[in-house]
Image 1 (tube, rainbow, N blue to C red):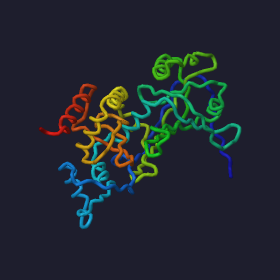
Image 2 (spheres, one colour):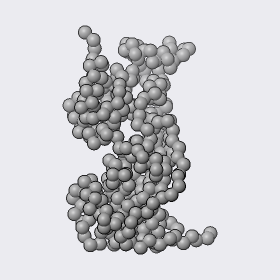
Image 3 (cartoon, rainbow, N blue to C red):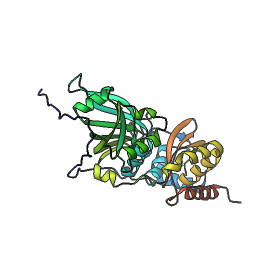
Image 4 (cartoon, one colour):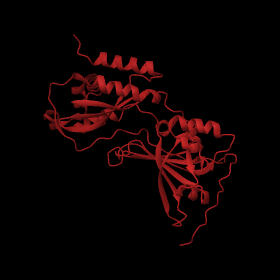
Length: 326
């Protein structure tokens, strides 16, 4: 097999590289929540009217007369229409909110083979990943030989069904002119990273060439695709992302029964418990359970939330609608 000699890169401060041309992209209509298609539970007939109508819509023949209903059909019927962020929005938001990923470089020691390193990173205002690398690190030496690399970021590393994004790009040292803004962006995500000012450290951009993603691995909602760097940079971070953690923490600590009531009413799916996992401007995801089985559900808001006040208002409205009418 012929060996291709990669272009060399000397780590000296210089202006940013630019990319010419357009890279094609494709993505499915939505990144659906995962569920197990084999889940079957015994559902009581004394359910809400909305649940009964959903059951009738997905049941036919003998199934409609049976007290055992395939709950995966209930989930699928609702989740296929549940409003979600566009893939580009979800990807842009994930990278903005993440702080750690797997950097893959071309090994100098084992020519032609990739080398992986866990690295901390942050994104600048354009969504470009920023690394703080030491000249002593093996991946820094690899990048100096060949700047082509990838950065893999997983929404939930322990859950194969969630979104996984791989940024393919080139490592470009940050110029002295850009360093103050880049340093501030990095320290906003890593406030204790005092070592970035050590002499052997410098900041490096990972300039995106193409972004690949996959979601729903090992589930019935497998989806994958890619975005060009232009498409990625043209997308904004979801405005609710910055408030998601405190809102979810409050709901999961003090209002789990309210969350369960909202899920039951607005999805027409029976649940014994529901814990918020994600929150965005179009709704939230929960980890729900029923009869000892767990699954994830997407719960859309009645309308898009623009700020934190909207989120509170929408949750209160959804809860009021879910409460039994006297």
